[in-house]
Amino acid sequence: MDRSPVTEPPSDTLPMTLVIANLLVVVSGLLSALFLLGVLSPPRLIMIARRFIGGTGAAGAAAIRLMFAALLWFSAPVASTPAAFRMLALVMVTAAVGALVLGGNRVARFADRMDDWPPALARLPIAIGLVLCVFVLWSISSVIGEIPRG
Image (tube, rainbow, N blue to C red; front, side, top):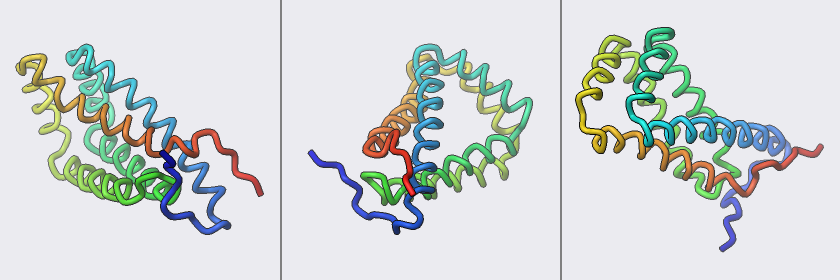
């Protein structure tokens, strides 16, 4: 099955789009590894999340979500599923705003509640994150490693 991009970016922006797409591959790969750790051991991922929330708070969580949203949005033209990338980008922006509105304390309390969840239930949202990261990697795989020429 040919998964060539549906829309090609203008040739003058293609080099930057490829750079952004390859950055998205790196970020998605790192997040996939983190989510895989969480599926295997939810308490370890919750511990990592607590450390992160304690250090940077909701602003750090929002910044990461906004960065991921920008990578998704600007690499959409070379993805096999550009509409899905743009939709995920909008979801990430919404999640970033939500993190800022809720604040670090509420997010930390949610992590505390996850400690009481049965392991199978705790794995569910983590597995969803893993599936989304794998989807992003699959969708962008046609341009992984392409070097902009020009």
